[in-house]
Length: 313
Image 1 (cartoon, helix red, strand yellow):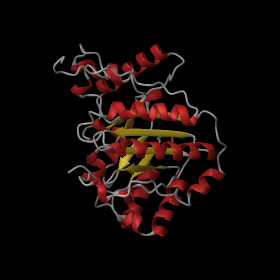
Image 2 (cartoon, one colour; image 1 turned 120 degrees about the vertical axis):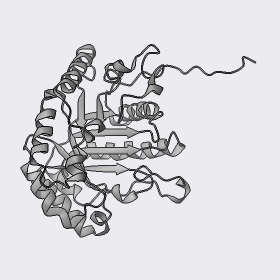
Image 3 (tube, helix red, strand yellow; image 1 turned 90 degrees about the horizontal axis):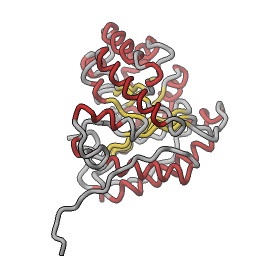
């Protein structure tokens, strides 16, 4: 079963909780900007359902990335969770991003890859004895150069607050110029207000970021805490359910408030749920609402109308 997935939405309170009290500390250190950096995309480009909708009807699988980077401006790069990318992969990703940027010119010029740390480091070795693997991974993704965005470290479900010293040591050893957001999944991080507040304070001191996950079946990971003026949000929808859009509406208003207070950058990864077939429609809705309510000028993905098979009568 996918993390946090539930089949009974009637039993879940889907409204957003208030922002964490530590956020006030973040706002005191920043000056609001009229044009925050907003990167929004999905978790996958290799989806055959996107052919004829997000990609041209003639698109071949080998060209999916080519078309993805021309529709969105970031991706949650889950592929790196399962393997350290080769030089050939890095070169291809850079080439495609550069081509998209050149075509867009002044309209949403950036494209950023946001790679996930390999599970061999986070889940198998639990951040210990992984110096060589970490160096290999970091060196690889640094090869993305200007197309490298936020990297994120997903902790395994068994990694609780008692392992903070391990996490602190690991984060401290990473290069200072590598942006890293941490996704916490063990429930004990959130059961105690003092533990989670202390965790945010420690991440702030390390100049590391948090991941907020909005998923229906695990509302504790929707902790609404920031350790920096950078948001990394994983929004897990429910295959086009109406609540996907009402939840989005509430997030837009929260983001407007946070931008007004000084949020500088937002990475928004929208999962459609299931096979992510409905993610493009939902991302387009996010973009439209962000532009309307937050005064942004994000490039809207262009979706081709779907042909409906059926009788003419």
